[in-house]
Image 1 (cartoon, rainbow, N blue to C red):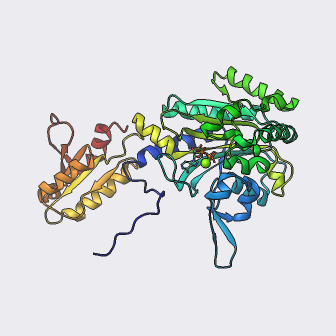
Image 2 (cartoon, protein in one colour):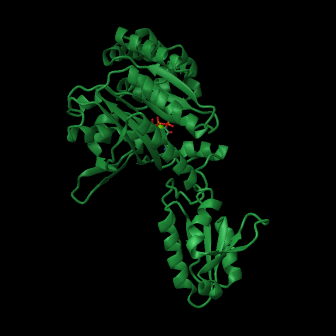
Image 3 (cartoon, helix red, strand yellow):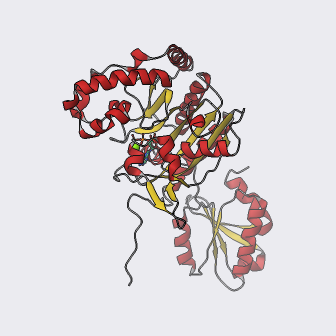
Length: 426
Ligand code: ATP
Ligand code: MG
């Protein structure tokens, strides 16, 4: 036997018993995005490395150490996308979608980050994301958050908390940044290695540090809230007011800064305590400067991304899955001439109603072996086609879940009607 090959570490197969939870999540999200007037955009998985360096920021975890970057055959440096926003902004500018237009877009797909694989953290993972262009908020900020709240409601997910902050305008951030750097510099000896490195390149990110040894220092740091420009303060107040009016609870977390460089004003995260350390299931905020930074016109923008693996873990934990997708009917066929008749009959049933899920027995086998497969398939009914039935243009029907249901014979012509009625598909 030759050596068995394995998947790349941190890149998972999503197996048939898991896909019903994924479908429930994806179908519900798609329906809700449409209900809020969002259109889908599909973007490449590979982009030029430069794009991520320029948008996410050189001194971020993602760009410093997590990107899957490689030279293609021409020697161009390409990267498997670590997130969706950069590509979406690039695609919108390139196709003129942000030019004097409002866009409400969503996307979905795999993202790649070379992180240490652990529960809730993988090297290929999946996001559903939303981006809006041309709206300055805070009305749209509130509506985006209301849309996510509706998604949790419709999925039956409980116990998610909304954390909210505002990073202020770019100018306010610069002013605050100077104060923060001065404070941290005065306590230089208490900074860990990461923070020392970030002190001048990305000091706000230090606030996000999870290092327990630095928490006292950070708790006493000057707070961004005290340095906000008036417009940001006003918008944040409005956002909070709109959320309260919508009955959405939130916690203001002044230390929420997000790990990427491009955010300003509103930032938010939905977190749960049910997934251990990897508790953020949805994260987003404003990135008003990004379109211009990538060569477009000055365009306000905001968005969020959800981590699907983490949401699926919550759904599985609660047992929330797509309604049953097992076959309705398993078709048992044995004897001369039964295969042709059976395959044709199954086609006619599918013609009669596209919702009918029929699994025909392929691969032959005795009646006994076929009934075993029928049971295992989860089907409600077994249709039995032997030579006698073919002769009479009928099938025998056995209920596989209800022992009180008496086996009966139904003519081919009446079979569609019979099944729809007994499966409550009318
Ligand atoms: P974290 O703090 O968990 O590292 P992040 O700030 O790097 O998250 P974002 O870039 O904002 O994450 O991505 C949005 C969401 O995507 C996260 O909230 C999370 O649910 C999910 N996510 C991010 N990285 C991973 C990963 N490596 N594996 C699985 N899900 C992930
Ligand atoms: Mg991360």
